[in-house]
Length: 421
Figure (cartoon, rainbow, N blue to C red):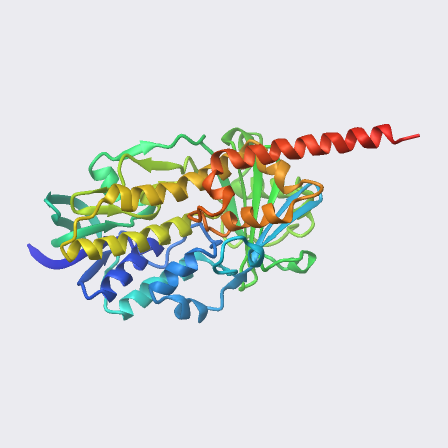
């Protein structure tokens, strides 16, 4: 059987795997990526956050991505019953990047993978991991290619950035259910010929369709736009017909979109994703570390997926480099705790979105700009800035603010009533 020796085996050629591979490769170690699928391949997670630009920069990917001409993204717009709440990343509390991109992921991910190959990291596509044996931190991974050829890869360490494939969690029974409720999305790309009816395309638009149901609108530079409805599975059970008929019927019921999306061409038959939230019992072990969606995937509402993927792989890569240099790493303190800081902050905002807390904050009559800037930093992905009260006390700060807004609006309404003749 053919056997290959590397310093680090990376599983997955998405943003998480390629960022990690690039950083470790730059440190002078021999790296190899194995990827189960053939690229380009479709995946959602099309709206990036500014924080991931730092990871892309360190990995050496920024210039390559710029050359693709993707749609630049400067903020996020929230819409409800005609009211608009805009967040512009340039206003954020935390110093950092003030823009990013909206990307068709098949093109974005292919560009990252091509670029890391140009850096000298081989990528084996359509190659499936069938087994891993660990001997301390050393490992032997058995893989099978599309022709059925079986080979082995010996590595001093494994970085698992396999995303939804969750290779190591499935092989070693690390998968655990998420505590978030099961949700469903129905989505497609459209030929957005009436885009001029909106004030896009330089940001994502998130529309509150009804309580617990929301819509994403992500314009791309190629004239296409990603559109998806998200909510409880029961909501979609009320709509009949083919998936295209269902999505067109839902679009017709949303005033903000109905005219703009009327009779537009769908680029592909609408697709369904459901029950995507997942987590793992541990993020590391002897000889491996999990990055990206393999650690925990929450919800698409705040576009956290690629940011958590790239930041986790950026951090993991540096720890792996230190490990290979012979240092002792406290993986719990130096990796799990920082990553859970980010995950837990985003989780608080996801929960606040679905329970209506953020509804109150986003559409308040007189928002406090300083507080809005702090929340903007979270929406930009800066969920590790503990100088930001809305990061440090994420579990309580939003609830306290929403209660204060309710109180102030109640006082204002009462004063308005008493001042009437």
